[in-house]
Amino acid sequence: MKEDIIHSDISKAQTLPSKYYTDEGTFLDIISGFSKFWHFAAHEGQLLDNNVIPLEHMEELVGEAILLAKNEEVLALSNVCTHRGMLVSTEPCNISTLKCRYHGRTFGLDGKFKNMPEFKDVKDFPTARDNLLKFPLRIWKGIIFTGVNPTYFESVFDTLEKRLGWMPIDSFQYDLSRFRSYEINANWALYVDNYLEGFHIPFVHGDLNQELDYDSYRTELFEGGVLQVGVAKNEEECFNLPDSSPDYGEQIAAYYYWIYPGLMLNFYPWGLSVNLVIPLSVNRTKIIYHGFVWDKEKLGRGAGGDLDKVESEDQEIVEATQRGVNSRAYDRGRYSPTKETGIHHFHKILTSNTGI
Image 1: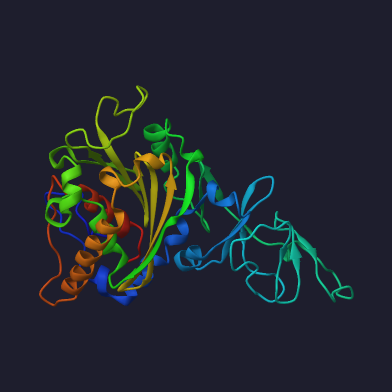
Image 2: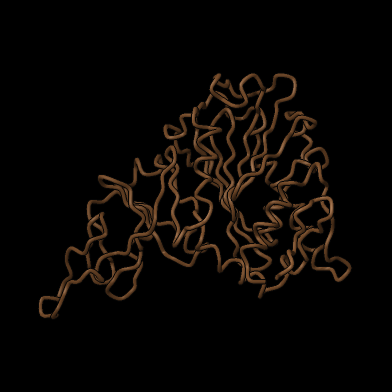
């Protein structure tokens, strides 16, 4: 029987071996499993002005070119033309027919083949193989998820609903001005590690520390993810919670959700900030931010007030940590049983879903 790399008892456990952050083979083994999980595609608000959106991040995450198309319903379709493999869509647009700009093959917004120039003499054509492949799709309160063959952690959606079912997330407005895309010199898992604990907040995020009550900050674990609850300090900006909320009566400043492997849903009184963690190589990672606004009057206030500053501070730490774990002097550390339960949970999920 294979011995667990991460001991289930956090007080006895050692952290991930450094090869998980530095070794190319280990990296490739890990990301090859990403096709088994649900990934953020978009929010329905992004489809109001454009009914077709190519999902470039999915190509980077799972090696599949996928697009979202909305007509009577939203579908996740292959973005690869069934003629010669050209990408069907390369930018968001509002159209009634998908048309490959290479040789003019067209498809309906349901992915079904419609027409192809100069093919009238082709025998046994068209067939079902000439349609665009459909990928699995789930929508939770306006947030669209897709994947290649997502079979893990279906309970995540129920977990989100039980905590945030009261929040009108489906009506949040997409704010393009809040879009950010960064590339950092660090392994993707180091970025996730950093996100999954508030332990570093007093040391790294001075301004954020003024907004949150460090002693009340808490971490909750669930299948496939972690929730961190930030409690406001001294009546700083917080949610007006209904009595149906499990946290009714508390001054909640933020809900920080992480869903394996690299989706971060950050809920603030002003709305939702989505972080996508996209591995590019063993020591390089892309971070994408999308913003969806609920109450614009609350922008710039509270725990979600200056996300650019927090991101910059985190990136500096994570890049320096990458340099550290490359050292022959370091292999593994230990966890704080009170402050690093989220990282411990992540490491158990990661190591249980690889063949290493």
